Length: 228
Image 1 (cartoon, rainbow, N blue to C red):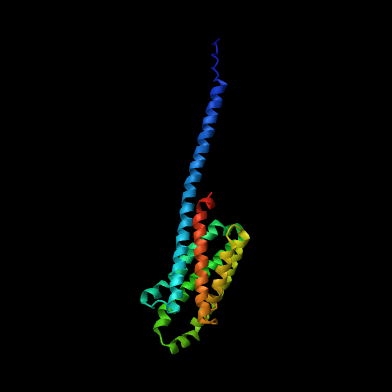
Image 2: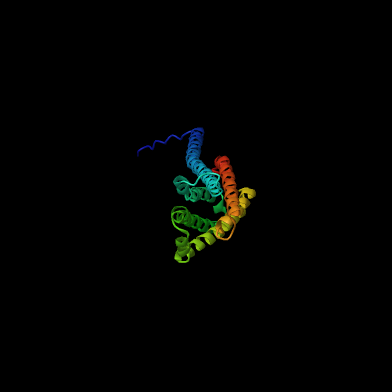
């Protein structure tokens, strides 16, 4: 009969040491993954903040142009729609950082506001690059047709989208309310530009620029904390 050789048992301390080493390595790997995921988030939020600052600066240029503080040139006309394009970047950053906390309402508000801003790009293109080259009679004829209806729909959608997005950020909490209030106040005369005096539209542009710059600066400072 063959004698069975007993398999030597590993010391309990060695097993415990190996388990501890594996757990430590797993924690280190998790930390590395989380850190690498946080870096793109910080970069994304700060890019959104930079886009917001750019949007605010162009809005100030638009206000100065309309007030005849600076000359109206081809460059200033071309820059006008870029304000809304850059504002889209800030809106995306604010939604990803805070707006999605509002759940389904936050998502719907973001989509409406995004579509409204995108349509407003077209409005700015028409006003600054088309209407500026046409005689008044032709502009009146165009406004009397489908183009006029499209401009009105875009303006109303912008007003409603801005209101919904601001409310969603208030519900989500975390975003300062004063610049949010200024954001909506500044958007009102812009959406109703066909019914308000010129000075009210200029004041709305300056107010909106201040609100966007405030939110952009705040998002830049909060980016590392928000990404955790």
